[in-house]
Image (cartoon, rainbow, N blue to C red):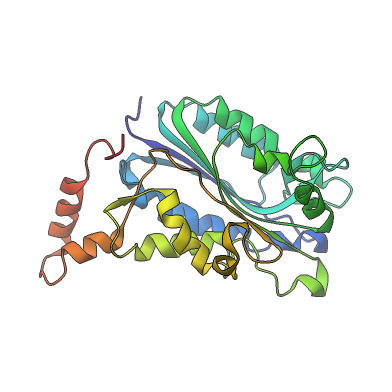
Amino acid sequence: MRMVGGVDLVVIGADGGPDRGFGGSARAPDGARLLAEVLPGMCFDAGAGGCRVTALEPDADANAMLTAVRSAAQHPGRWLVVCLVGQLVADPRGRRLALVTGGSTADNAYRRGLAWDWVVSAMVHGDQEEALLLVDAVADRDTWAALERGGGEDGAGELLSYSRVPLWGRIGRYAPGRRGRDAVLPGGEGSFSHALTSVLRQGLPGAPAAVGPLDLQPAVAALLDGAAAHGSSGAPGARLLVPPEGGRLLMRNRAAVRGALAGLSLSEELLAVLWRESAPTDPPSA
């Protein structure tokens, strides 16, 4: 059945397991739960009722994760949104990336992981009009070095610089052991998952009732670990992935609704009706 105006949301928060080198993924399940809880009701054109959500178990393997993305991509609709939360690892040549999955070791993490290329390819060939990849991740020293080498064929940075789908999120540096205990972990306090869901819950005062990712980005960046003070490249040891201009994925601005109804004594049921009636079938920018 075609979901006209619908959103397919796939949320993956991968816990890398007990290996101390992958401790950067310890809070990934928490971030995934936050995103799966908050994002569906915030989709302006669809709402929770028009959002099909697939949330993977933290210990799922790469095959199950990829199958979920491919299955969601086959549903006709307006948007495909995929969320990757966890720790990234580069292949031995430093040219490809994968999300570390449960039970990985230093010797097999890339082979066992969910390859970035696979996710992007599935999204590119999906049956939706638009796609967006949300990333809340960390990278160890070697993977970070591969990302820092930038575009071209010499480093995994090309996957971020020239991605075939729009990206939005944050990738931070992570050092295993005691050196990494003060790092911002994906899904933890100060992470992109926390910042995005906090902004969506609070809204943007003075902004329209429907806002896009680029409208939300300054407020999200202000909540990240020092990101606002360092511009679009983020805090030292972090890289912000800023959503591009354009696109028709719009989110509800709760602050606009609160402002419009300020001072009125209305029941929750009536507020819900007013909210539904005020939401157009198609987003204003369509």
